[in-house]
Length: 80
Image (spheres, rainbow, N blue to C red):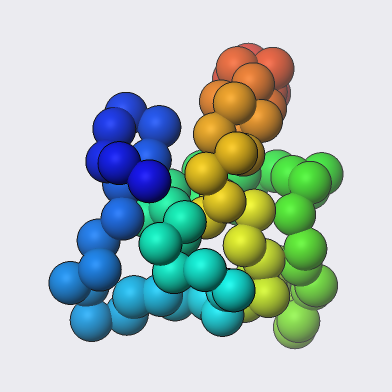
């Protein structure tokens, strides 16, 4: 995919890709740190370990087609 406001891939990052995926060319680095982390019902895959939200197996913010989902979720939860 081409870098844009919806997608950015930083293949020069020393952590790239930070999660195992099938196709590195579609790995979206735009939300390097998940903006939904603070939400209990974020829609991603996580578990609670020692009281901490653990998202190591989640690729939701790194899938290019999830941009609209993330922005929508942030808009709906901005006042909470």
